[in-house]
Length: 404
Figure 1 (tube, rainbow, N blue to C red):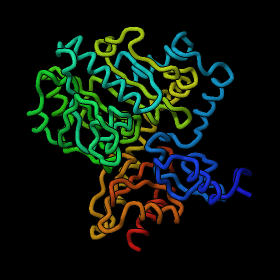
Figure 2 (figure 1 turned 120 degrees about the vertical axis):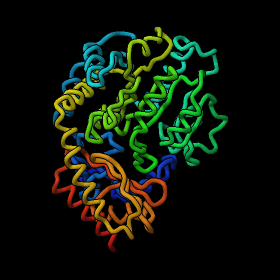
Figure 3 (figure 1 turned 180 degrees about the vertical axis):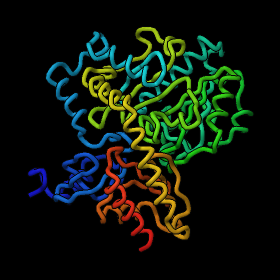
Figure 4 (figure 1 turned 90 degrees about the vertical axis):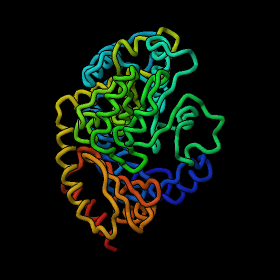
């Protein structure tokens, strides 16, 4: 009998998935059926410590009681009306998220990629209507190693062959520069640049932290050239790095935040662009939208997420446990680990001679779930509610596979 009392063994369920699901992912051989806090259970009853947290979508752990309760309350009232009508959760959600970000207006969507697409449209429209760039000539600067999603427009400026190759023709209007190179950015700024789109820390690239002062320099250049600084904080935001937003580590305030993942509390997909009224005010009715974006259920859950973040408890926990995690990871043998990168409860571990996929398979055998990226690197991003004891146990498992 499986842990769910349900529909088969792990092998049978994996075979069913392989036969009927498009092979756009290569998951580890684990079939999860239950989860609570930082732990998940597979169909055969084995427990694993989740050290990925769905790429930061589960910052508050699986099925956090406050978030489940918020969802249940809303499920008993109304879940969807579309934006053709108002509902009682929408205005409060927008106001509370704007306040959390220190901004004025919110444009809600569903997924992170939708929010990035929204930010691109916003920046272009602002560029034409406010900055005065000739129609069709707007340029948005991005950085190599970026990951902002997998829509056709977004993969047009990806430098990852797996994400980009085979999906052309590509959308024009983007200029790709080396990540962290402020001199290259200074040379690339001109009157057609409407925005610089950047991850404060590049997650998919291996949790790459830019050189100190880079974000500050980007902010200064955007201000000097009348361009928008758009911070993609879909993975790095909402407590992951020990602050509400990763931009805070350099006291940088962007013109636009792009948020997602953790905003939905691991229950529903919620994303948003948050900015000033001068920027988001360029939209008029009918020019952008989403049937599900800003729906009552999403807003109710996201409001509870915002309330939890407003106490500062989770940011403080991420900073404290993150410092402990990095202290331990930095003590791993230099002969086995080339580099440990990251901030807060977010780390990229680059191995010297161990493929990332193999490292994750070995960790799964030991009861720890993590995700590889770009060859020899794995990412650790445990839920912010993980206990110090469980975190230490997970790092013990990392140390064991390193020394094996």
